[in-house]
Amino acid sequence: MSYVEQVPSKQAPEVVSASGAVAAESHAGTRTVSRRWLLFNAAIALNGIVGVALAVPIVRYLLAPWRRDSSYDSWVSLGATDAFPVGETRLAFYKNPSSNPWDGQTDNVACYVRRESSDQFRVFAVNCAHLGCPVRWFPQSQLFMCPCHGGVYYADGSRASGPPERGLFTYIWKIASGQLHIDAGQMPTLSNTAKLVKISIGQGDCLCSG
Image 1 (tube, rainbow, N blue to C red):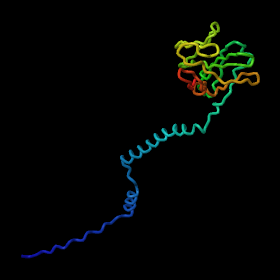
Image 2: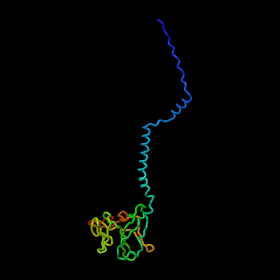
Image 3: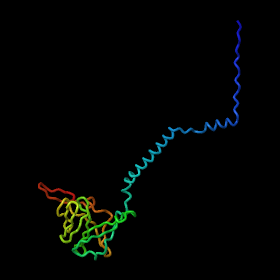
Image 4: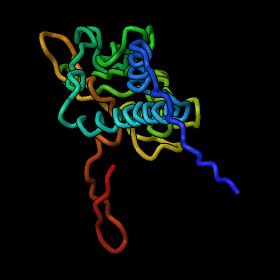
């Protein structure tokens, strides 16, 4: 029996050209962008945009007490005091100090001015103290009446009858250079005109806002 010795053949060395080496290095340095990676980063960017959009109003709310609006303390003129006769109630208009250019005619705010004496005025908000409907002044009966729910007020603005639980809201006013001015920076509401009133009840007294 004869044995044949198998001699492993030598592998020929790989020959890589210079251009092939450069192409391989360039391919290794290039990052492959997969669909999963793209969607992941897009989701992160979208979450960031949503987070910023939600944070802006919160930050503005927190900074509001330190950034007071200049229109909040605005005195506007309703006209010369001679335009309001003693003992009469007249409808007047003024421009909202916090209006925007696109508001149009809606920035004209109505109010009622009653001159009680030569140097005493009462300026009433036109809105009913019930749900805010505009009231009308009837000089024949000397009453303010609300067309929505039947609220009625006397000439001095106090409640006469109907759903309202209080009288008409009033503006703070002053006279300067013969002109009647009102503080129009804040609309008169219960939040900025409320005061403690002592009310007598059966078993004692209590302090209530009104």
